[in-house]
Image (cartoon, rainbow, N blue to C red; front, side):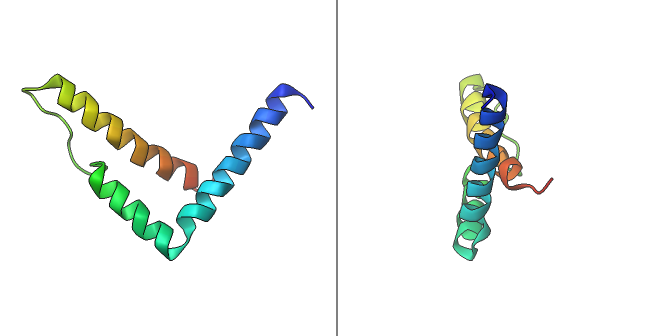
Length: 73
């Protein structure tokens, strides 16, 4: 099998795994908690501490990544 096709197949399966994991009622509750804890819908900018901003943006990127993985395309 071509390397690119193998990678695409693994990514497709991983997306399906994310959808299964976060598609249940329990998964939706966990995802909602992650979204809140990772500041998905709020600002993470701290004018006094660029390290804290970077840390919080890292957390936020995880919530956004999960949402992107389960988004139907």
